Amino acid sequence: MELREYLLILKKRLILITSLPVVLAIIALIVSVFFINPVYKSEISVLLGSEPGSTSSKGQSEYNDVLMYQKMTKTYSELSKSKSVAEDVISNLNLSKSPEQITSMISVTPKADTEFLTIAVQANSPNEATDIANQTAKSLKKVSTELRGKDNLILVDEASNPKKPISPNIGLNVVLAAFVGLMIAVGIAFLLEYMDTTIKSEDELEKLLETSVIGSIPYFED
Image (tube, rainbow, N blue to C red):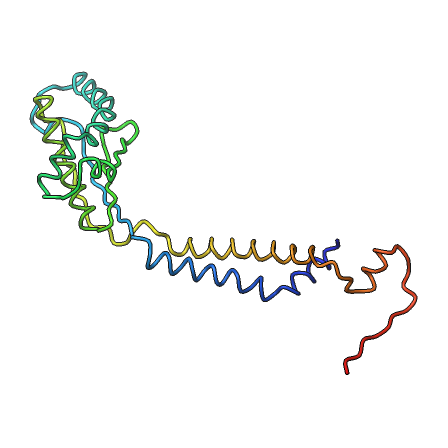
């Protein structure tokens, strides 16, 4: 089948090829806006280390402390998602969630080769995401101090309310739905053409019979 024939097939099914992507894009837009709950993300940074002025160590001792705290970032990352921290968050914010629900909302990322931890919280409300992020940092500081007998956390800043949700990505959903609709429509067009066994032109007849057409009888409607 030549390129010209492919184009003729697409032209014949032009209504299908243009309408199906539009329909799926509209459906994706409606689902994204009205049926998918938005998710907001709020972040807060904490620093592993002693409060300024709490130690008099200098030189090599300070360097060793930095290396120690860098190695401890993974430990504090796990502690951030512990049941003890989650229960303290629930208690301070008077939440009706379980510790498991709180920990599932939290993700902790150590920054490579630094003493920083980034605590991120995802929730359906921007205020809830911000409140839990801030309280998680405070609860981590409290629980770690109780466990180690020493305060090794510094709260660098506070989480702020996110201005827009991180999901759903309405624009991306609409574009993907339209693209999928286009692919489906093109596939249906070629499938319908493949299933149509009628002879539609002299060229098809010549290819089928492997001979030349001598003449044709025109069709006239009454």
